[in-house]
Image (tube, rainbow, N blue to C red; front, side, top):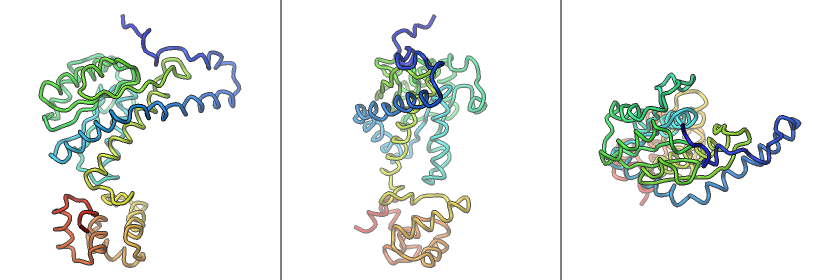
Length: 297
């Protein structure tokens, strides 16, 4: 039998022992107060998160991939973050990958027992042909999910960089991974429901990993998403606003340069900033590894 006694995520929260007797507003207030502790808890682990981000940037620069591995809520958060990268940052579909125990169907419906298989974690990484230049991030609020353990163990054997994100100290996945981020979020408002504070902590950390690593490889200029993909009307309007904000041109000029650059926001901005044609802008961006700011040096 699994021993959950030492896991803070499984303990009862003394502030909500009478949750079923609280008014709606009282329950909301205590929940909100508990949630406020999450960001503060993460602050104490920024140095470990920094190491993880630097490892991811290095992997991307070597054409490696970022691979999230998790089960249940943790797995869904990884899949979600991976899915947001192509439209936000213009990444290739396989540059950031989210693997969830039980496969894609587990995103919307629980696949019972899938998280208990170490071999499945290893197999899923083999199926995507994990390489030494990749980074594998194991996600488990408990820190002991067998699926994640199996994936991290296998990743270590082939020399890939490994990161563990858990919400309990001295976690099993933290012992296995080369970089351990163990943020203690404490007992949940609803005992053992780690889709609450623990999941919020994981989501905030994933935001940091993907966003700041994308900044590191030149997919952001100032604080603008310059590799944004214009896949719908809203994003087309946003693309124009980004070009205008980055270059201080009017909408007509932004539209013209965006069309000249075949919908490529970064290319349009570079053409305007350097007052050059498409070919020159492409060359400058290639020489600067995609960093707009470096094209101006």
